[in-house]
Length: 154
Image (cartoon, rainbow, N blue to C red):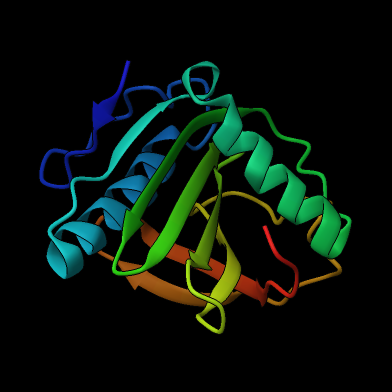
């Protein structure tokens, strides 16, 4: 069932099995606040079983672009379009968030972003491949993030 993420009253709904559920909920709320403030978009997530095509699209891009397979169990996904961008997010049990920003028109920005919830270790599949910058968030504590540019067509 779809869940509109509330960034005022942060909730761990759907993320309870994560060992860093509070931090992951804060990270998810941080993304919801960004999209509401920048695009007036309500950030709504759903369980993976309700939108397997979103997970498949993200997995395909990770595999084909960088030979990456995320080991953690995906908990929630979302996919939407704003300002000429197709966006997709996957929130994982480990506390990892993967997002794809895909410019719909040729020549527009296309990238994959990784965000690590406060308190989680860098996943084994990413540890030697990316450097993670830190940013502070009132909702999520310290977020570590990295990204790569998508070269292919998806």
